[in-house]
Image (cartoon, rainbow, N blue to C red; front, side, top):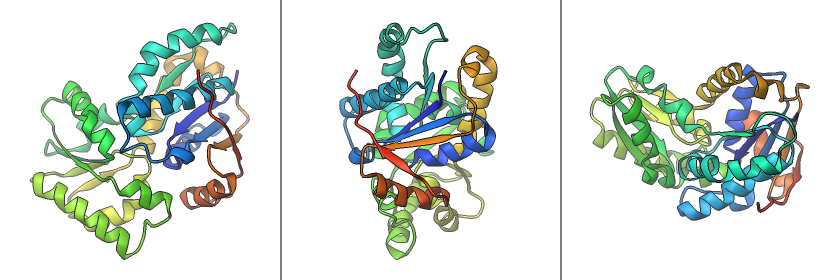
Amino acid sequence: MGPLGIFDSGLGGLTVLQQIRHRLPEIDLCYLGDNARVPYGNRSFETVYRFTREGVYTLLKQGAPLVVVACNTASAKALRSIQQKDLPLWQKEFNDGGPERRVLGVLRPTTEKAGELTQSGRLGLLATRGTVESGSYTTEINQFFPEITLYSQACPLWVPLIEEGIHQGPVAEAIVRADLDELLAKAPGMDAVILGCTHYPLLAPLIRNLLPPNVRVFEQGPLVAQALSLYLQRHPDLNASLTRGGTIQYFTTEDPQRFDWQASRFGGQHVQSKHIELLEP
C-alpha cells in the first residue's frame, strides 16, 4: 500500500499531477522531480534511461505501487526498457504480497487519442529534441491511425525557458514563434497540435496566440489523467493498493527552496518539497 508515484525530469510533470489530482482527488501522490539534471531532452538514450531508471526505482522504494513517468523524453527513450528489463527483476525485491508494481508513461495515452484530435489527418507535434529523434510518436500514431500524418518540431530551448521562469515576454515570444513558423511551413493543412512535453502547458497561451485560429492545441495532462482512471478501473488490485488520504509529497534532487518557488508558478499554490538522493538499482 502506498501513494501513486509521478516522476519527471523537473517541473513539467506538475501539469500532469494537477490533472490527476482533479480526476482522482482521494489518491495520495508522491512527486519526484530530477531538477538537478534537467533538461533530459538533449541527452543520449543511455543517459535518459539511467536517470529515469533511478527515479522510478526511488519512487518504488518510497512505497509507490504504480509510477507514472510524466516526461515525454523519458517515456520515449526509457519506459519500454524499464518495463521489460528492470521491473521483472525489481518485482522479486518488492514481493510483499501485493500486486505487481507497474510503470506507465504519457506517450501512449496521447497517441491513442490522436484520431479524435484532428479532422484533416494532419497533426503537429511540439516536443524536445530527444522525443522527436526517438520517433516514438510517429511509430505509435502509425500503429493506431495510419491515415494520420504527423509533423514533428523539436523545440530545444522551451524547457530551459520554462524552468528559468522566462515563459512570457519578448524573448519567449521570439523563440516560440521561430519554432512554430518552422512547423507551419512543413505542415500545410495541419489543424491540431500536440504539446508533446509536459512543461509546454505553461507556454500554451502564447502558442495559441501565435498559431492560426483554426489550429487547436492539446495538452497532455487531461488525456493522461483520463487514461490513468480507466487503467485503475481495469486493474482493481492495483487500484486498491493505492492509499487514499488526498495527500501530496514533493521531492526534488535540487534545492527544495528553489523547487518550491518554481513549482508555485506551475500550480499557483504553495508547495513544500524535500531534497532526495536518487537510488541506483
